[in-house]
Image (cartoon, rainbow, N blue to C red; front, side, top):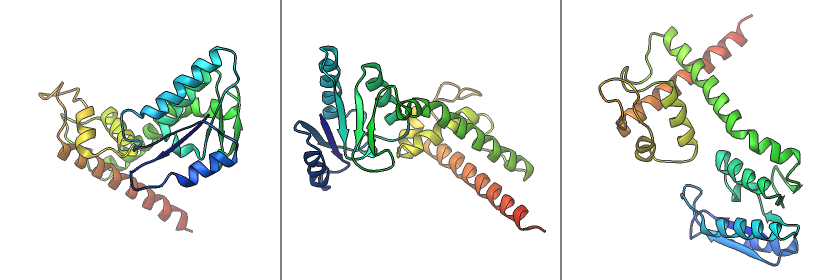
Length: 213
């Protein structure tokens, strides 16, 4: 079975549909919806049907033009986890992950590890940024509102293309007088801006060190 997705109604699905047809896929589920949407009905339909068919003993492979059509980061990892649980294969017709992938294969293993890898990467970059900020006498966010856990989550949500207002609504203050409340979008913007500044300064410092004789 095949799945095709475009992010907006103005984008055409024809290239993906032609690619799937050329690959011999006769049943295609398609939709025009952003990866930021909390639900993708047609993707849910194809996964459900694939699960039911596999349970009846039929070998099933979900065929997609490119892995980005399924999602990015944690969203793609979660979908791969669902498919692996019901023994459904994946095939990407183009892109970095082009090819057929068995649920027990390396691609599924890597995708399943993505959440932990992403959290570890964010944590390392956050600690580096904070260390740079401390050396330069700067603080990250408000002392009684933001913390490293909040920053890590905010960075992850930003990578999912959420707005500042959406990010703020998903964060919770864990300390101080405002404990239990959501930070304001302005606080989130300041926290991310300070983090970006710290990362930039860290990179500049590394470049300077490389240039020294």
